Length: 124
Image 1 (cartoon, one colour):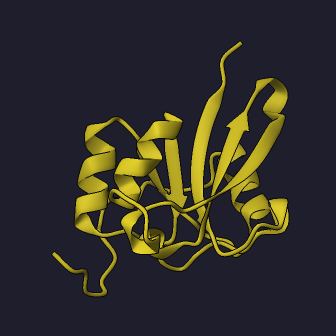
Image 2 (image 1 turned 90 degrees about the horizontal axis):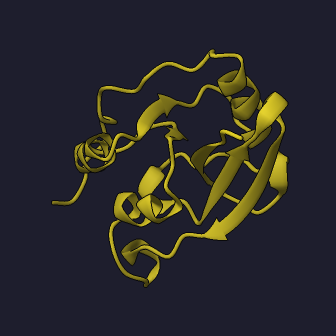
Image 3 (image 1 turned 90 degrees about the vertical axis):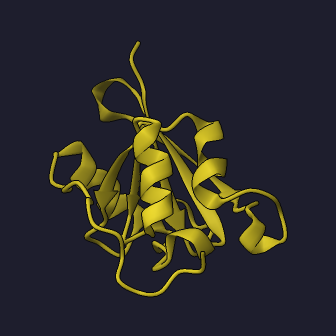
């Protein structure tokens, strides 16, 4: 059985109804979505344990432990794009406010690749 793992930064722990975070690196939670046969999926919401929340590591590096095939987000900085892309993680642009809507659009092939970093300043 082939499965796909997608990581999506979210603001809250409300399952499919969780709202997506506007800022990839500062999302309080990460939704780990495992898509199985027949487009059935499971969701686990995990606290963001990156250095932005008193933990360790960059958010993009920490996400790699989930072995994602893709990340769906409104935007991310150039370093995160480089880290994820170099690990063969597809970066897709979110288009809807909730987790469920973005998963459904992913399953229908309606999300576009994100190739440009977001345009607000990032610390170096």
